[in-house]
Length: 255
Image (cartoon, one colour):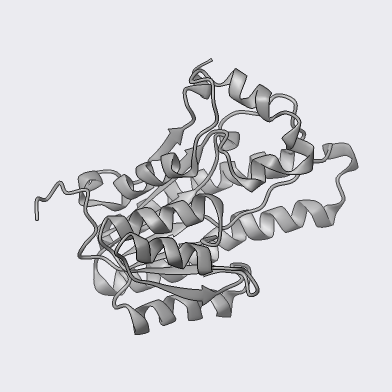
């Protein structure tokens, strides 16, 4: 295999938030690139659609029930992937939530839930994955952040989400520096407006046309368009990339 291959045939992957949206697209793209993939999401989530698409892509996927805010469950998810598929070397942490509320009126519980899932959840999963990869001496982790960690979205009052995604960007850089000599790369992908259920939630759905109009490419991204850059960062084609936050925003942040 070329040292600059975009293929993932020699890897084993774990994807969180895999039941839908970007997580589902990433799991399928990883399968298309040749790696078996553990598809993780909350208990009660329907992972069947993702697993069907992984199988259609010629890959092998296994379902894993995991709450990313539960330290023991995250550790167990990594152990399950390794037991069923082999040594973990690839991971994409996509589990996350979003909602909106003015900061002056936001209940502490709303703030804390977003941080628990979008920041602490990424830390716990990346830490568990990193521990396994450091034992094996190789690995690549991609955390899904957001362009909202770089800019403040016009018309959306979501200080908790924006600051949480900025934390994911900087957490990824920090872990990249801690683990660089251990053979583990850590990067983040920051999507712009993407056509997922998260961007069709009630407080955002009415603004979806404006999101597209405000994006230089004049549309929102498809989830698969976020999956491609994630697979690139996982692959040996990105072997000299670590601590990178890759904006995939249709040019939005150029304005």
